[in-house]
Length: 456
Image (cartoon, rainbow, N blue to C red; front, side):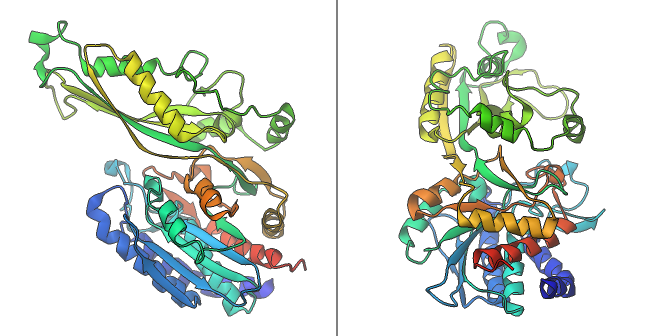
């Protein structure tokens, strides 16, 4: 593999600058004003794939944001890898907490700081450069397809239909994804499970306008007070979610598997220090890693009401809102959970307010078998580059489209992530270590070697 390392080393500055060009495009899928940027990002990916050696690449329409598709078919009889990634990113709010311009990448302390540096521009772009490296060194021994979408951060609402309409084009033996992480920089791991997601919004309406809190306070129900009380009741003192029926379909993980999971290195003090908390919380009877890997959760992602500007404005607000995400474990159906949530919220709301509950998006959980050939190839690839056998882990995060791929395309996915907990994805000052970017390229190249049957 010396020629691989030599090629990466010789071109690493160009690889980085090409990634920076992608990062500079503010492709925020949740904001309509960035619609044009989604097309710019798709065109950038198309050109990057063609430059890397794809036979063809094109920007394809969906009912929402575009998809960039590319391929190189060297022999239809050989195995085919379908690379999935996403070009869209999260909003940058709160902008005042960023130390640098979120769309002007900066290298500091060996890390790339920018929105999308890790999630998922940095990680997805490793695949384009691994693909180029394989072609330029004459080591590509299988077919490769790329599907880079523009709506992952809003739940991939149009990708299932895209897959349904393009089944033949997307035929492959395995889907390869880098949108997850490592246990630690020197501890490789492969994500074998993802939690599902149900993302909801609540709107409570009390009086028909904002009222004077002196003239009406104490006589009229305050929607903000009511909503706060309702949300507080959703989790009990043992960390259990109180929605009736919520746990009905949760599969309990065996004690044997829990013991295997516990072997993963985990420094609880470092974990707390890294996020700046003195104590942790969660469902009673489970470890921190279990709470985020094999158990469901419910969290308020945003809550707003009344006056929040500078200074005082003594109002009793007319409305109160909250966005709430529920992370689900495999076997929990996100549509069922959304219905249970809506029913429960309406049941516990007092008659002093009107209630509106909206399901924004969601997806199923996913579990990847560790005995399939693609997993074994990934395992060997990490071991070759990192010198250690990777640990299988279940992630607390969600990539809702992964389970859809299996349902619609009938293809399993391998999640070869290289991000770290401290990369601050979705938060201000998102970053990605340069070492992980380059090692990721090298590891992906090694995956293709082993997946193609070369065990040398």
